[in-house]
Image (cartoon, rainbow, N blue to C red):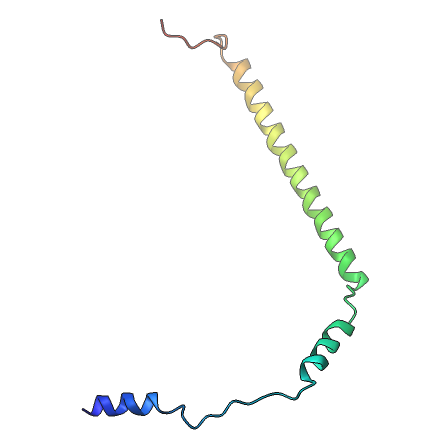
Length: 93
């Protein structure tokens, strides 16, 4: 029974609340403040972004070249060390 009273108290707790209405011109004031600001990015931020992209691209190119050179040296050393020719056809019968 006590649980039912608590539920009723919670359900009826919003009865005395009244809806608040904003000032009539508030929406227009907010819209004016939002659209009057210039969306300008500082020049330093643009240069930092451009240099970061350039640095990242350079590091990627260097890494890829090292990987390719390493694979080429492994292929040539493997081919030079083996006495048997490389077979292209792996047909068993």
